[in-house]
Image 1 (cartoon, one colour):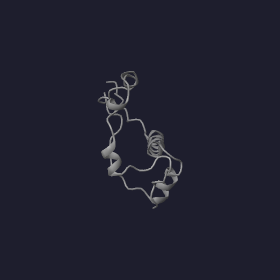
Image 2 (image 1 turned 135 degrees about the vertical axis):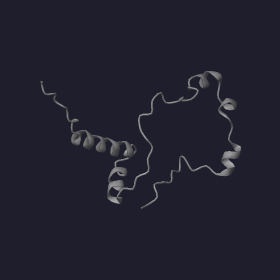
Image 3 (image 1 turned 180 degrees about the horizontal axis):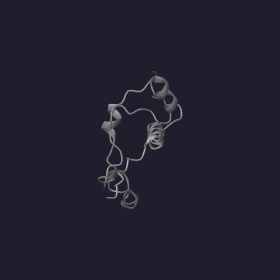
Image 4 (image 1 turned 45 degrees about the vertical axis):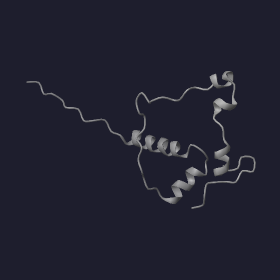
Length: 98
């Protein structure tokens, strides 16, 4: 499998020196600009997905990755459709009169 990193001349990868020279947002942005950003996302109210590790065939991974960002969500969507299609209703018990 090939590396997913692509060189971008307009946005090069940071070096240790770049990180050392970097300043905190509070040091370079005005209070007005900083107020436009939220503090942080915060905790999830109810987790919607479960983190797992799964092994997939290279052809599957390549197919979805070639479609661009969101490839894992697309795999989830395909699997969800299959599960919903295959899911059968639970058998119901019928009471006999008597």
